[in-house]
Image: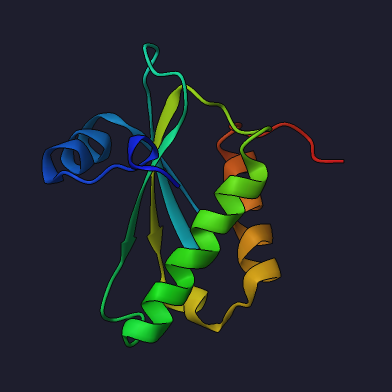
Amino acid sequence: MNKRQRVKKSKEFQKIFNHGKSFANRQFVLYLLPKVEQEEFRIGLSVSKKVGNAVTRNRIKRYIKQSFLELKDVINPKMDYVIIARNQAASLDFHDSKKSLEHVLKVAKMIQKIN
């Protein structure tokens, strides 16, 4: 993920939370906000200290980033995404995390069918 693909500022997070739509499953909450002028999607990550220690939180963030990189061809590029990890995300390996993210993206209708 390069810098152009990240949501970093608190104002940007708040705008997405307040004006965007949310979708959830047991492991992740997804907020999304359309950005027509954008060429590529941006993601913001939030993993609370309640989820686990620093090692666990960083692992979850790595899994989410890698999942988005692998799904970048089928994800709507003109959007800002904020992903909040819930406690159950700590027990997932990479493949289960990716499946769970695919599920929440399909519920949000941001992803086409994957072959």
